[in-house]
Length: 279
Image 1 (cartoon, one colour):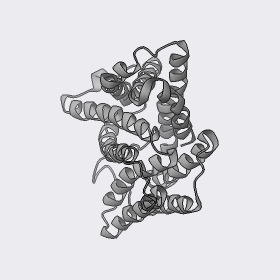
Image 2: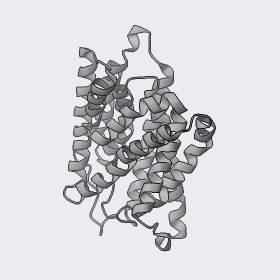
Image 3: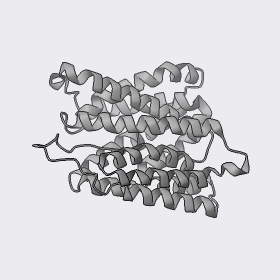
Image 4: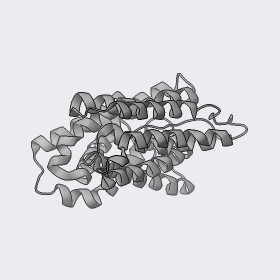
């Protein structure tokens, strides 16, 4: 979570130079090159029926990355992370197979309202819209990643999907970044790629080998708090008291939504594998 949110906070300067889509394209491209240097794509293991999910995950990752970076261009990092978190939180509540669990996304939504303070009249609709798009995309991302993780292990799937994500971001990112590329920009993009996506993906896989998916998801509920903390320390985005209350509501709702959210054992359903992360 620290790596993800630090990468997001440090991306703000690169966004100013090459735009949100340009930053997404550079970061994903560098991440794809690093992953391909670390592992060979498991092309022999790819079945025809896997292709829609692999392509869908790659495209979704590219779109979510662009949308989230566009969001933090308009609204504070902590607010963008909190809105985006509504996606995985809703998925966790739905997967609990308990109608009462659906109250937690509603609680988190109250927290988002406290964060955005629409009653003040200066709400940034563009930033909120991009973050909401990222939330929907993140929900799709988790669903597809769970499906793919049942067949591929290690970072094999990443060597297939991250290049697709980079190609997706390139459609908008290359025109936006052209004319602004230099050694400094490329070096910054490479460093940011290590922070996100390379390190978080690796750390996440290590964590999931030692804890249950439910425990992992509960800890991941701290993601919005990390967003606010890094926004404060790196970007000097000071939350108000009512915004801190909103963050606490979202974190509480995210942890509570994990109750009963385990997947069934392999003989009843598919095997537990991945993974949620923040790209």
